[in-house]
Amino acid sequence: MKKTSILLVLFIIATKSVLPQFKVVGYMPSWAGNVNSIQYSKLTHINYAFLLPTATGGLQAIENPSKLQSLVSLAHANGKKVLIAVGGWNNGDDGAFESLAANSTYRNSFVNNMINFVNQYNLDGIDIDWEYPDNGASANNYATLMQQLSTEMHNRGKLLTAAVVGINGASILNSVFNVVDFLNLMAYDFNNFDHSTYSYATQSINYWKGRGLPASKVVLGVPFYGRPSWESFATLVGRGANPYADVFSGVGYNGITTIKSKTNLAFDQGNGIMMWELSQDATGANSLLSAIHEVVLQRSGGGGNPITIQAENYSNMQGIQTEACTDAGGGQNVGWIDATDWMAYYNINFPVSGTYKVEYRVASLNGGGTLSLDLNAGTIQLGALAVPSTGGWQNWTTITHNVYINAGTYNVGVYAQAGGWNLNWLRITPPATGLLTSAGKTTDGTISDDAPAGDKWVLYPNPVQHQLNIQAGEDLTGGTIRIVDITGRQVLSPRAATYKVDVSSLAPGMYTLIFTKKDKVITKQFIK
Image (cartoon, rainbow, N blue to C red; front, side, top):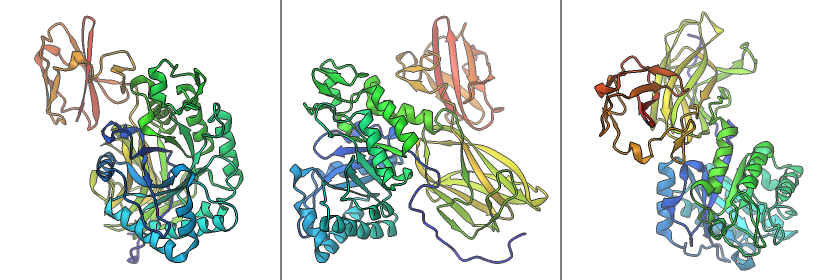
């Protein structure tokens, strides 16, 4: 084996994702909206608004604490992060921030109270929304406060973000850029009627990047409401506004077309999109969040495009070292891997639920190694692979397995069950979206699982090992059954009338059973 010494456990904690993860940040106000109605699968972060400070560094009572608790529970169950948004417009009164930030005793008290609040509600971080510090002493006090919060949050593995004005934010000093995980640019409320144009979004991104804010920390804000009426997008659509337009009865808003354009802009020039606020969205086909999600899937690999993680770009590890790599592309690889060593890659986004192909570029002089994949420090085990001998530490081959993952953002871990191998990269290919359902239809027009015609259909057991049973509530005679894999390739065509399908020959993964009889087409998914 290549490794000659036992390494101490090293922890290298990164403040940003090793794989640029496009963030979708939604504010949820304490006074509006139902946490059970949130489309969690289409978000990465949710900011609960607002917690208000006192002038001496205390905290006012949070409104609807039970709502916050429910939000955290539901979001975490869906693999999403929840932050507490502190401040807000508050009728233009930022006096409490001005007072506490200017006094070291009050500032320390505020920071300690925020630590306790985050711990009490099991939050993932803090979003400071001070509207707005002034130039001069106020700006310096803001920077000092953010530095102190950053130290305490990051030492605890928590996030620190801030909401900032779209342009002309000179009171946010450049030193703040280094201490936050990202900034939410409030690229709205600039004027009255035309308060959030595409042009203003571009200006906002250019302003902050022009000052030195890294693109990885740029999150573009968009409104889910119109001005000057302040009506929600849902209300505007409800009274006749075109969901794809931007103007209705003298009210300026962002419709689906503009929201999609801004999401693409955020992909091209930044690393996320934020919306104020979730309860103002329309439902169904008119949902702005769904429009954002469509772009996210197209741009981030949800359509089957692979993402590659370089092994040396770990966020955390135990017992490994890096070295120069002679594989295609050069760079570095991870080596000196013993049993129980591991590498973790934080905040990897899996945009859809389904079967993902995971490839590993490995090398091993003698073979005998075993790697395994897990999520969130081993709480979700995804399976193991044997590492073969490649005849040398720089003789590379690719090994592959398929794993089922629910949509969400996870910390991905590669664990050495047995050592003696090198790792250059891992590549994750999402499921193809050809059979993903939308509004009751698959993309080829067939009736999906959620359609009423399929309500009486049940496939069991699911997951299945050998025999898949069909409970249909109807006569299958005269119909046909096709089973396709996640790429849409047909892998079986059993007789429909038997109500039983032998799937023992199928590889592990997700499949779709398609039943056709005259003009009826029903699809059901199952896992092998």
